[in-house]
Length: 349
Image 1 (cartoon, rainbow, N blue to C red):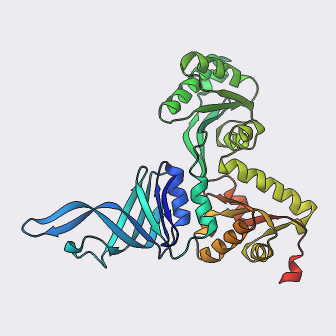
Image 2 (cartoon, rainbow, N blue to C red):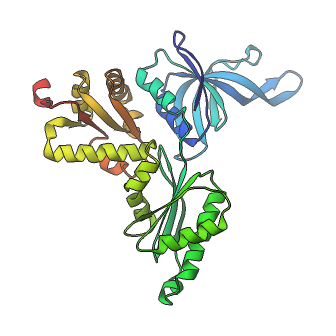
Image 3 (cartoon, rainbow, N blue to C red):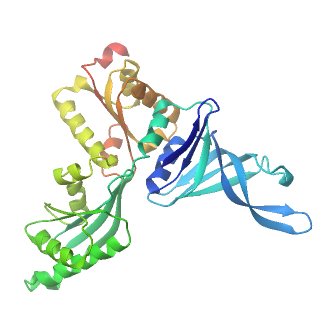
């Protein structure tokens, strides 16, 4: 995300979308009732020519948004509030297809500091690592985004290789799959994990096959496949490599939250009501909120909580629905907080 211009007196922020995570961030920032302005294509009646599809700049008041995780398009649907006068489009419905590379203006009655912070945080480029977890039975290859884990390859490995005791053919296939994934991504680091020594064999073969000096890290996991990838995300090697990735940071905060929940429960809060009480007392040091809670029916209340936390200097992480953490967070009401000090919630009800 590149923030191109800001005029907060008019409530206008103009951005350029640079990757799929930017689209996900926009989904969490744009609200129903906001106005989105962008260039688009629209079928209009032209005198003497009938209908023609023409490029034009439209302003749409948002009614709905549609986004599929890891897709390269955000669909914004609403009512046209401004456009070329000659076509009489005001009041008609229109859907923007916002893709990577698009420039978009967003107009709000007022921007919260939490919303602006989300846009600004996404202006820095991040390391994009390929995560590989395999064993004798299966392999998964994935990329870690702020919104979660995108799996590129899930594959069973041939039983013939392990039954014959010949690991050479198996590691050849794993190497080929990694190269195939590299050719379809812009990854600038690789983390290879397996039980025992198989990762060493694959790393050696991979270094012989690729010409670039892309860093390759090795680590151990108890199994391959998706279970291995999720285990790898929690390993120190990946945390150190990808410390700025939202998923990694969110996992660390959640681990701290769970330890405190058992050892010092007055130092944490969870669920919208309790977290809101803590936020109004400026007690929150770290906050995790599930994407669906932020964009759901209680979105205004939750955005208010985020704004309070932001203004008091707390750290906020939004957890995407594709994150491995989402299921555990959902079981705690979709929002949890680590507090600056012991806070008796019962005295503030």
